[in-house]
Image (cartoon, rainbow, N blue to C red; front, side, top):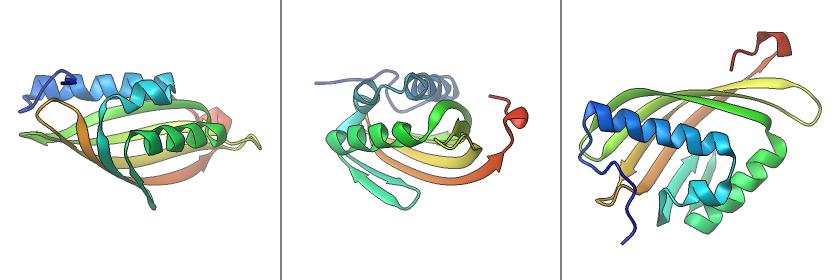
Length: 136
């Protein structure tokens, strides 16, 4: 049985650990590595897209980073209860044309008993920024 520590129910400390592990994984931009933190049948809503299962997650992330270059993410604890964690985040990237963006959003996560994320609901907004205004 796959397990990803820390396991629920989360304490403040273990929720923050889980968030840092997610931030580190996403900043690696390694879709296969990232997908292992999710259940094989994980359900996502990411902006207007619905992504289900590890293979779809890998495909989604590969496409994401073909368009979002020089990606850098920061996640922040918002709340937790039992097997759920809420985070706020921001990330910066540039597109192929050289325009920089900062994306802001919130995610709601639900984990199974083995610490794998089974649900991820993300609401995200992008703001065009000048390169000089980057801070991540």
